[in-house]
Length: 340
Ligand SMILES: [Mg+2]
Image (cartoon, rainbow, N blue to C red; front, side):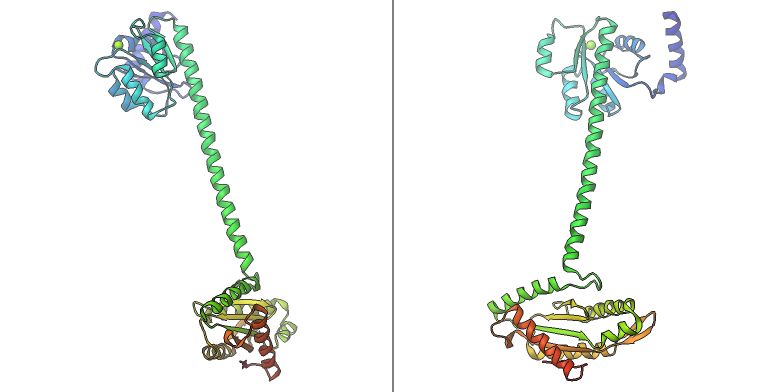
């Protein structure tokens, strides 16, 4: 195709607006020059290879620059804002967008000076061969592509890291929960109960604040298992666990001690109040009906209660032993009762 014919077709395309549609296969570049003729001739020789955005001045260019642009050809000597100023503004917003200075005044703008001062991606003299300009543009575009690819990978990695961190946090929370929660009933387990008891003992010794420990054992629980099976037995334990939990005051700790045995830690509670609370628990459980797949089941509890004031020396083992012993007395005396 002759050069004239090509130019003619290009003009037609321009007139019908065909050149407005950027091709997906071609990278987009921007050319900034105050000389309309330079813009037109560059556009003419480069438009087969690139989508081109033409700007006849820095102001217009700075408004149009975005991430879709892979490289910029920038005239140095321009009216109003010169190329160096435009360059600085570009750098403030796009620190890795390759800029190629393009000037006819390399005797004034010494290439070495320009490199040292601005560190542009390239410096091409107007009047250089097409090959020089195109190869500089192509390496700028390759650089930009690499940069964008790295940025994308970095963001991907960051996202993956965040996801991973979130998963680790979730797992950690779950593990922390498992450490203190009884698997079957979902209330606190013996481990948590003991650590809380240790804490209350130390507080009680230092500030003479009383607390009560209550052992609650389901009466004749074995017969539930024997009659209805272990699945129903487990359901009963779950129901009793959450029922006891619902009866607790805000500062109480309810835990499953093991088997069919539950404990209450009553903070800042003396013996009289503790006893009243234990009787309320016994009453409440007696009136509580558990809905199971094999019908309603009712149970009673035997409760042993010990107060910090009664135990000398006050230790974890001594107060547990006393409350446990009293719970057995309650059983021995006929069950469904409170022994203090
Ligand atoms: Mg100029």
